[in-house]
Structures are given as structure tokens and as C-alpha cells.
Amino acid sequence: MKKISAVLVLICLTCLLIFNQCKVSDGKVSIDLNAKPFEKLSDYHFFKGALKDLIPNDKVLPYELITALFTDYAHKSRFVWMPEGTTAAYTKDEVVDFPAGAVLIKNFYYPNDFRDESKGRKIMETRLLIKHADKWDALTYVWNDEQTDAELSIVGDNKKVSCINIHGEKLNLDYSVPNKNQCKNCHNLNNVQVPIGPKVRYLNKDFKYADGTKNQLEKWTEVGYLSGYKKEENLTNKIADAFDEKGATLEERAKSYLEVNCAHCHRREGSANTTGLYLMLSDKNPESWGVMKSPVAAGRASGDNLYDIVPGKPDESILVYRMTENDPEIRMPELGRSVQHKEAVELIRQWITAMK
Image (tube, rainbow, N blue to C red):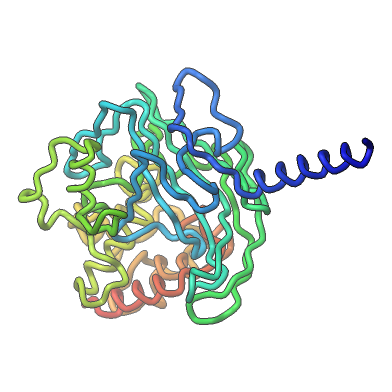
């Protein structure tokens, strides 16, 4: 009898271990705006099957941005979900107007080998932006080492990363998960916390869905996630892919990169509105972009340079200096970067060199 009991216990423990490793989640998406956030990511049921596979549940729609925000070379897997019967309203210039209950889901991960993602990946964190009637709530879930689930974290975290980059080189870094207050630094428009990414001009591209390739804005309209969008009015309403040399001019690519990576703060309504450096594509004033503009207050962050941008001279431009530096008190952006984005620095250097 004791042997039978021991066998049963062993079977139960084995089943529990297998369940935890797979962490299967096949229920409907669960969002209650009046309840406390779930402690575990799996409880929302955004994904079905093994959680780490990030297979979207019904009505959880994947999306991409034409040019993405740089976060220490992390890859991102983005999704959107909205409650049944609700839709986002089209806005031409800012983030689309999401309904209460909408959720933006962003997973940050590193492929084991950037050259071949079939070799596996390590998911670092999942960030949620949940729309309430009068505000957005930012929640961060940190994944465990077993990649079975992610737990809510208010204080952030630091995690070691070791992988092979696109050039076949070893990439080792300390990945920083922001705390709840740090989220507000970037997601700030007129002192209100808002999303950054899902603007029409950032989304206006094709995406390969499970049922075929389609323009993302048309897909959102088709599934009822976007109203008021008209294709014929938005044929040119898109930013450039910063790293597609054939798709746009050097200036268009450089400015698109800077808007996506810097203009959430460096705009008149952002947290860096006192700097006089405004990097929205809609701003046509060269001085607003830093051309021969003295910094308001840079100190040693200027690198002893006098102007944000000196045409033809990237090595004398504060913008390049701060993009190159990794010192937390000097680097730009301040958050989300601990290593230099080498490809972006080269892009901006080329742009400034070509200026007359």
C-alpha cells in the first residue's frame, strides 16, 4: 500500500511539474477594471497554449510599428485587445482613441541567436497598458527563469542577458525593467500618462497575420478595432522605416528614428518641453530640431560642444555625443538604454554629415 501511495504522489508531482512548465491558458481574456491587477500574467488569458509561446487568444491582435523604440536591442512582440462591442476612434496625428477596457500588450525578449530565432528566446518582461474611463494604467510583469509565467512588479528588476547578436558576436548586458514611476517619464503627454506607439502613421504597414498579409489599419477596421479610418486619406500618412535605405531619404529615416525614440519627451507637450529641442516630424523649424541651437542646460552632458547639431560636423554635435555615451547622467534616451544603438548613431552621423 505504501508503494502504491508513493507512486501516486510521484505521478501527481510529475503532472504538476509538466503543467507548470507548459502553463497552458485557453480561457477567454479576463479584464476587470474595478478589480486589482492580477499577480500573474497568465491569469489574463491573453495567450493560449504554453504561455511562453505567446500565441494570441481570440480577439488578441498582433501588431508591429514601422520604426520601433530601441531598448538595448531587445525584440518586442506587441498585441492589442478590446472588449466586445468597443472600438478605437481614428485620429490622424496622435495615438488612436482607445475605449475603456482596451489593453496594449508588449513582450520584451532576446533571441538566443539573433541570426536564427528558431534557436529559442528568453522573455524578459511583459508590459500592459490598460485603458480606464479616465486614465491609462501601466503594469509590468517580470518573467521567471523557467519561462512559465510572469509576476507583477511595481519596483522593477534587473536581469542578465547573454545571447548572440545579428553579427555573430556575444552580447552581454544588464537588462533593466523599469519601475512603475519610471513608466510615467516617457508615457507623458501634458502630464497625463498615455501610450506612445499606436499612432496611425506608425501602424500604416502590412503585417503577416495567420490568415494572410494585410495592412494593419485595414485589419483593425475589419475586426472592429478601429473606426473612422479611410485608406485613401492615409496613403502617405506614415513614417519612414529608419533602417530601410531604399524606402526613404536619409533625412526622412533619421527624423523618423528621432521622433519614435525621442519625441515622446522632446515635444512641446512632453516632459522635456523646457529644452527647446522638439523632434516631432510636424515641427519644420530647423532650430527646433537642434540645428545650431545652444542647449538650455546641459553641463557636462554637452561634451564641451556648443550646439545640439552642427551641420556637417557630427563630432561637434551634442545630439551625437549623448546618443554615443552610456553614462546614465549623460546618455539619451535616459531610460531603456544601457548600450549604444550603433546603427542609429551611424544613421544620425550620416544625416548630420550630409547637412549644409
